Amino acid sequence: MTIARQLRELAPHVLAAVVRRYRDFAAAEDAVQEALLVAATKWPEEGMPDNPRAWLIQVAARRMTDHLRAEIARRRREAESMSEDEVAPPPSTDEQDDTMILLFMCCHPALTRSSAIALTLRAVGGLTTGEIAHAFLVPEATMGQRISRAKQLIKKSGESFQVPDERERAARLAAVLHVLYLVFNEGYASSGGEQLQRVDLSNEAIRLTRAVHRALPDDGEVAGLLALMLLTDARRAARSGPDGELVPLDEQDRSRWDRAAIDEGTALITQAFARGAVGAYQLQAAIAAVHDLAARAEDTDWPQILALYGVLERMSDNPMITLNRAVAVAMVHGPRAGLAVLEPLDGDARIAQHHRLAAVRAHLHERAGDRAAAIAGYHAAADLTSSVPERNYLLMKAARLASA
Image (cartoon, rainbow, N blue to C red):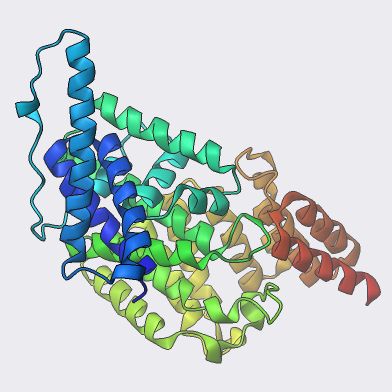
């Protein structure tokens, strides 16, 4: 394991230990980042310490002590009564893993979705502010301000460093899973830029979801989300060509799919279904499993996928689900039937201007033999996407139809 990867995996454990002792998330996060930078500089030259986690905790604790003493001095200057005896001792270097508490804290209900994602990647994922900014195509300074505001909101909320009670935990878990789902999606299909995929983000989402699954092994939706990620990520190698171009699902070389990931994901979703209660992530994982278990694209069990999307659509008011159901309808009942399912989405502000709606409509027009409408649709979709590989793929589809 490389030093960079080990530091990333150690980061949440170190941060948890420091926050648990000092109860100041913002200051602890800054101290841990400083400790990680020191390690990244020293370890390649001096070698890795025998106990890397304890080493990082001690360095971060010294930074926290300096911070507290500075605060004491400031308060004394303001004629307050705090004494240096109140400086907290270094945190324990035991092996307690508080990753779950950190995840719940980073998904505090006071935070916006984008702030929760950024803070989770920084505090729990161990990514730098620059890496997060690059992934989401914003300036590093902007991302830094977003993360800083998120930490201040948590501080003002008075959030204690402990797992929320049962009622709040159930509500907060949904937010945690949603954040991890969004991080994975951004990694698997980057919303903008030159890269089709951001493997660091999808890998990080899988790693963190595994941690949640270890902590909550009997939760069906946690298992469902992990299964969904594994079954989707299993196609990663076949999803792009030699020049990074997009390869759609029905054209992928399925021999390049990761069979171990498919087997693990299938086992997870099978076990989750056996527990009885079925949620949205489990249904999405089941759909992914149907795709992955088909030896050829033409062997795909589209009636089963359509049935699963029907259940999922009744469970969740999400226009993307309707969009995907339209494709399944087209595969079972023909492209005109699929186009009819798309019509109401034109009035849904959440998706009306999304490139995927235009792309799916163009695809169904192509299947229906309406070349002019398909070409116009592919051009419209290309204009709406910020992803260079997706834009190139859509323009290529239009060009091939125009020259046919």
